[in-house]
Amino acid sequence: MFDLLSALDFLSFGFYPDIDKWRLVLAIVIIPMHAVLTVFCVKNRYRLSYCLVLTLGLQMLTLWLSIGDGAILRSVKLDELSGLCLNLLLAYWSIPLATILAAGICFILINASSKSLAYILGLFFDLIRSLPLVTLLFFNTLILPMLFNPKLIITRLEAAWITLIFFLCAYTIQIFLGAYEAISYHQHESAKALGISGWKKYRHIDLPQMLKHSLPALISTYIGMIKDTTLVMIIGLADSLGNLQLLISRNAYKHYYIEFFFILGFLFWLTCTLCGWWGKQLERTSNYGKT
Amino acid sequence: MAKHKIIMNNVSAQIADKAILNNISLRVDDQEHIGIIGPSGSGKSSLIRTINGLLPISSGTIEIDSQTITASQPSADCSKIGMVFQDYALFPHLTVLENLTLSPTLRNENSTRDIKDRAFSLLDKVKMNGFGNRFPASLSGGQQQRIAIARCLMTEPEILLLDEPTSALDPEMIHEVKSVLEGLMQSQLSIIIVSHDISFIKTTTNRVIFMDEGKKLSDQATDLFFTQPENERQISFIQQLDH
Ligand SMILES: Nc1ncnc2c1ncn2[C@@H]1O[C@H](COP(=O)(O)OP(=O)(O)O)[C@@H](O)[C@H]1O
Ligand SMILES: [Mg+2]
Image 1: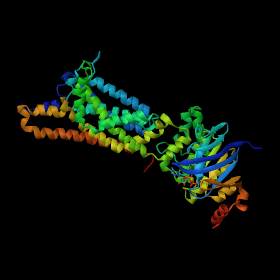
Image 2: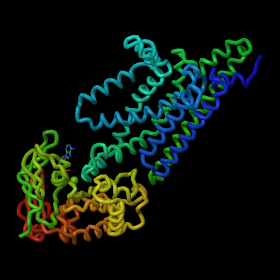
Image 3: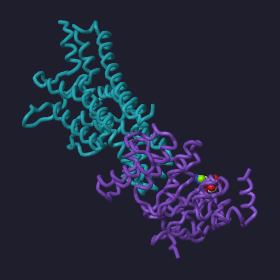
Image 4: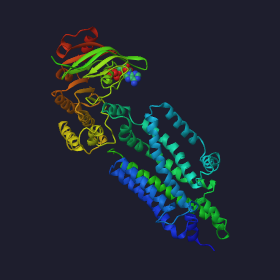
């Protein structure tokens, strides 16, 4: 029987147990709240470390809500996480972590006293950047466990998650390095004349300006990442596209596949547009007195 | 006799194998104000940049108080040396107040309270009261330069290096910056100023150094410099100034 609501429900949540759906809904709702809080932090010029703690805290919270098991929440199997929620959460779990990782790696690349470390890091991320995401996903989920200890079981979801983080990180590093170049050498000189160097200089002078300069490029990379999460279907994770195919393979829905594609397309458009709008807000709140 | 604050002995410097400074020796006494003049590209900026370690030297020594800078031993601590750049070089993402407090805060020398008090009194001194929460981009060039002056005074330097502090400004703004600088010249600091503003050099410095092509061509008391020039190049330079 055709039932639009249950179809949408399936597209969004897949086989996630009914009684636990509130947890996923809550986790998804946290994402825009986090976005708003970030704008708030930038507007009030809170320290970057506060934003970092907030981000890591919310990441843990959403992880625990959606796939955590423990005394309080019923344990959910990782594989049960699917549908549009999987896309959104995968994007949400990769974007901040990849950005933080990239910021850290840029510090090493910019300030490294040992050239070899910078060289190895550069080579590693260059490799990741040069390979198609699909290849990386395959490699990390299928081949890597074969090469190393097969007992070391990481689930496909975890493998996909880590791959996405490193993939996004590889791009973000380049964006950050470009933004670093945009900082005038006068500022490097005056920092030196004021005796500010090393991590303190990176933290207080370079990084805030790098983040600001790189916002437009960062946001479009993030949007790319949101869409790239649909590639996890290829390693057998049931994301929204996967669920869509399952859905239209059923008799009741098979004549409506164009409509469902449109619905899903609309949802992605909405998500990406909101992300772009969020980026605009961030740019506006961090324009430092320029009119 | 006044004690020497800075002693440069046969200092040379090069950038990418090109000689920028050539065997320069120079003594700056405590509380002395020295003007450096010379054509563009003569190495005036380079000379003062060697003093706070922005430009490494390739030979010679620079003694600043007890510290010695050589080619193999670049400067370690420039907290006693303040520098003002031609183009202000404020940090655009920080407010005026944060620009002032950043360095002392990171050095952890005083309590936050003391640092802020000092910042406010310096803002007062450069007549920028009430601008603490503004961003540099919202200020005029003259205002930014006054903030930059206040910023380099935050660490209570004993030596001040001023590299064409008014060159990027239009005439009205030059006036407001000069009046702040004149106030500074009354204080107990050793000051080296690079400037094309000859009247300012005449009224505020004790000694003038003339540079050309990386060499120090003359080093005279200010009044003698303009009345009894020592060499041909200097004479033609001064004649050009009169026109
Ligand atoms: N980063 C640099 N690379 C190459 N040459 C430089 C650099 N900076 C300065 N120079 C050269 O050093 C010389 C002295 O420059 P500078 O000290 O800035 O002169 P001034 O301040 O007297 O105008 C000039 O010939 C200039 O071309
Ligand atoms: Mg110069």
